[in-house]
Image 1 (cartoon, rainbow, N blue to C red):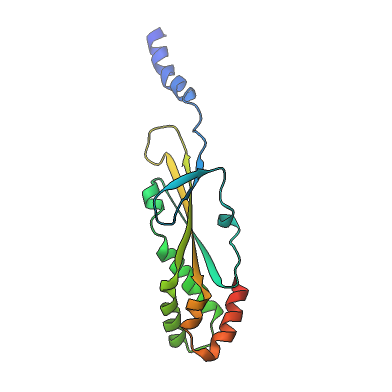
Image 2 (spheres, one colour):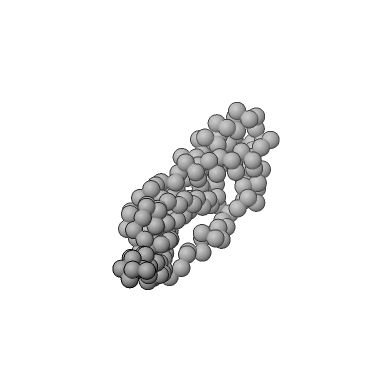
Length: 168
Protein backbone atom coordinates (compact mmCIF):
# COMPACT_ATOMS: atom_id res chain seq x y z
CA UNK A 1 0.00 0.00 0.00
CA UNK A 2 1.23 3.46 -0.82
CA UNK A 3 2.60 5.22 2.29
CA UNK A 4 0.94 8.56 1.35
CA UNK A 5 -2.46 6.90 1.06
CA UNK A 6 -2.03 5.23 4.45
CA UNK A 7 -1.04 8.51 6.12
CA UNK A 8 -3.94 10.29 4.42
CA UNK A 9 -6.37 7.63 5.60
CA UNK A 10 -5.14 7.65 9.20
CA UNK A 11 -4.67 11.41 9.64
CA UNK A 12 -8.36 12.20 10.37
CA UNK A 13 -8.44 9.52 13.07
CA UNK A 14 -5.26 10.87 14.66
CA UNK A 15 -6.59 14.43 14.68
CA UNK A 16 -9.89 13.26 16.19
CA UNK A 17 -8.08 11.33 18.94
CA UNK A 18 -5.85 14.32 19.82
CA UNK A 19 -8.53 16.98 19.99
CA UNK A 20 -8.85 16.67 23.76
CA UNK A 21 -11.77 16.75 26.13
CA UNK A 22 -14.32 19.53 26.33
CA UNK A 23 -13.48 22.12 29.01
CA UNK A 24 -15.44 22.01 32.25
CA UNK A 25 -18.49 24.25 32.49
CA UNK A 26 -19.09 27.02 34.98
CA UNK A 27 -21.93 28.48 37.05
CA UNK A 28 -22.84 32.14 37.33
CA UNK A 29 -25.47 34.24 39.07
CA UNK A 30 -26.90 37.53 37.94
CA UNK A 31 -25.75 40.29 40.28
CA UNK A 32 -29.12 42.06 40.15
CA UNK A 33 -32.19 40.44 38.58
CA UNK A 34 -32.59 41.60 35.00
CA UNK A 35 -29.26 43.49 34.98
CA UNK A 36 -27.47 41.21 32.54
CA UNK A 37 -24.34 41.35 34.74
CA UNK A 38 -23.15 37.90 35.79
CA UNK A 39 -20.66 36.74 38.43
CA UNK A 40 -19.10 33.31 38.31
CA UNK A 41 -19.75 31.10 41.35
CA UNK A 42 -18.37 27.74 42.50
CA UNK A 43 -21.57 25.73 42.23
CA UNK A 44 -25.25 25.79 41.46
CA UNK A 45 -27.13 28.00 43.96
CA UNK A 46 -29.13 26.01 46.51
CA UNK A 47 -32.43 27.67 45.56
CA UNK A 48 -32.35 25.89 42.19
CA UNK A 49 -32.70 22.43 43.72
CA UNK A 50 -34.27 23.28 47.08
CA UNK A 51 -36.96 25.91 46.68
CA UNK A 52 -36.98 28.36 49.62
CA UNK A 53 -40.05 28.07 51.86
CA UNK A 54 -41.85 31.18 53.01
CA UNK A 55 -45.11 31.89 54.82
CA UNK A 56 -45.60 35.26 53.13
CA UNK A 57 -44.80 34.48 49.49
CA UNK A 58 -45.06 31.70 46.93
CA UNK A 59 -41.78 30.76 45.24
CA UNK A 60 -41.49 29.45 41.68
CA UNK A 61 -38.36 28.30 39.88
CA UNK A 62 -38.36 28.13 36.10
CA UNK A 63 -35.73 26.39 33.95
CA UNK A 64 -34.74 26.77 30.31
CA UNK A 65 -31.88 25.45 28.15
CA UNK A 66 -30.41 26.35 24.77
CA UNK A 67 -27.05 26.48 23.06
CA UNK A 68 -27.25 30.28 23.16
CA UNK A 69 -27.34 32.15 26.50
CA UNK A 70 -29.40 35.06 25.17
CA UNK A 71 -32.14 32.61 24.18
CA UNK A 72 -31.92 30.69 27.45
CA UNK A 73 -32.23 33.66 29.80
CA UNK A 74 -35.22 35.30 28.19
CA UNK A 75 -37.59 36.55 30.80
CA UNK A 76 -39.09 33.16 31.69
CA UNK A 77 -42.22 34.93 32.86
CA UNK A 78 -44.70 32.96 30.72
CA UNK A 79 -43.53 29.61 32.12
CA UNK A 80 -43.57 30.86 35.71
CA UNK A 81 -46.90 32.64 35.22
CA UNK A 82 -48.36 29.35 33.99
CA UNK A 83 -46.95 27.52 37.06
CA UNK A 84 -48.35 30.18 39.39
CA UNK A 85 -51.77 30.16 37.72
CA UNK A 86 -52.00 26.37 37.99
CA UNK A 87 -50.94 26.31 41.65
CA UNK A 88 -53.35 29.09 42.63
CA UNK A 89 -56.29 27.54 40.78
CA UNK A 90 -55.52 24.11 42.27
CA UNK A 91 -55.04 25.29 45.86
CA UNK A 92 -57.94 27.74 45.88
CA UNK A 93 -60.39 25.51 44.04
CA UNK A 94 -63.81 25.43 45.68
CA UNK A 95 -63.44 28.74 47.52
CA UNK A 96 -65.15 30.69 44.75
CA UNK A 97 -67.03 30.03 41.54
CA UNK A 98 -64.58 29.14 38.74
CA UNK A 99 -64.99 32.44 36.85
CA UNK A 100 -64.57 34.52 40.02
CA UNK A 101 -61.48 32.54 41.03
CA UNK A 102 -60.01 32.96 37.53
CA UNK A 103 -60.50 36.75 37.75
CA UNK A 104 -58.82 36.88 41.18
CA UNK A 105 -55.86 34.77 40.05
CA UNK A 106 -55.45 36.87 36.90
CA UNK A 107 -55.45 40.03 39.05
CA UNK A 108 -52.73 38.62 41.35
CA UNK A 109 -50.30 37.34 38.69
CA UNK A 110 -48.81 40.73 37.70
CA UNK A 111 -47.31 40.82 41.21
CA UNK A 112 -44.83 38.04 40.33
CA UNK A 113 -41.32 39.39 40.90
CA UNK A 114 -38.06 38.06 39.45
CA UNK A 115 -35.66 37.73 42.40
CA UNK A 116 -32.71 35.63 41.21
CA UNK A 117 -31.23 34.05 38.10
CA UNK A 118 -28.44 31.52 37.63
CA UNK A 119 -26.84 29.81 34.65
CA UNK A 120 -24.65 26.82 33.89
CA UNK A 121 -22.55 27.21 30.73
CA UNK A 122 -21.08 24.04 29.23
CA UNK A 123 -19.04 23.13 26.18
CA UNK A 124 -20.38 19.75 25.09
CA UNK A 125 -17.69 19.13 22.50
CA UNK A 126 -14.59 21.10 21.49
CA UNK A 127 -15.62 20.63 17.87
CA UNK A 128 -16.65 23.95 16.30
CA UNK A 129 -20.13 22.81 15.32
CA UNK A 130 -23.60 24.21 15.99
CA UNK A 131 -24.88 22.93 19.32
CA UNK A 132 -21.43 22.39 20.83
CA UNK A 133 -22.42 24.51 23.84
CA UNK A 134 -25.29 24.34 26.30
CA UNK A 135 -26.53 27.05 28.62
CA UNK A 136 -29.05 26.08 31.28
CA UNK A 137 -30.73 28.96 33.09
CA UNK A 138 -32.90 29.08 36.19
CA UNK A 139 -35.00 31.97 37.42
CA UNK A 140 -36.62 32.27 40.84
CA UNK A 141 -39.82 34.28 41.05
CA UNK A 142 -41.88 35.22 44.07
CA UNK A 143 -45.55 36.06 44.40
CA UNK A 144 -46.43 37.86 47.64
CA UNK A 145 -49.41 36.26 49.39
CA UNK A 146 -50.72 39.76 50.10
CA UNK A 147 -51.22 40.26 46.35
CA UNK A 148 -53.19 37.03 46.05
CA UNK A 149 -55.27 37.66 49.15
CA UNK A 150 -56.05 41.24 48.10
CA UNK A 151 -57.54 39.90 44.86
CA UNK A 152 -59.95 37.64 46.78
CA UNK A 153 -63.17 38.53 48.59
CA UNK A 154 -62.61 39.13 52.32
CA UNK A 155 -64.87 36.21 53.26
CA UNK A 156 -62.43 33.62 51.83
CA UNK A 157 -59.06 35.22 52.60
CA UNK A 158 -58.44 33.30 55.84
CA UNK A 159 -59.02 29.91 54.23
CA UNK A 160 -57.05 30.94 51.14
CA UNK A 161 -54.10 32.06 53.26
CA UNK A 162 -54.00 28.72 55.09
CA UNK A 163 -54.11 26.76 51.84
CA UNK A 164 -51.40 28.83 50.21
CA UNK A 165 -49.09 28.77 53.22
CA UNK A 166 -49.38 24.99 53.22
CA UNK A 167 -48.45 25.01 49.52
CA UNK A 168 -45.20 26.82 50.34
